[in-house]
Image (cartoon, rainbow, N blue to C red; front, side, top):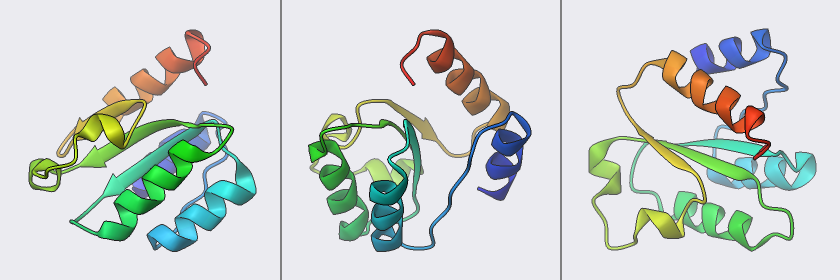
Length: 109
């Protein structure tokens, strides 16, 4: 994530990071970002609850999930967790940057 933070900051984006899902949710509510890049490292109920909480907000950031194939093996369809994209690790950071630039061009964020 530090590489992505650096690349996005170089492009002029404000980047905020949180160590836990709870801190991330607090940060999301405080900053109300247009784009949320959320890394699902493991099967943590808190991650999924946080994403569902964000989807209930009046303003809904575009959500890009970063995940491993194992994390996605679950009963809950990924479409319930994100309105956006899913990048399966490993992936090239440049692909994510291109996607974000495309979202800006399409005025989705």
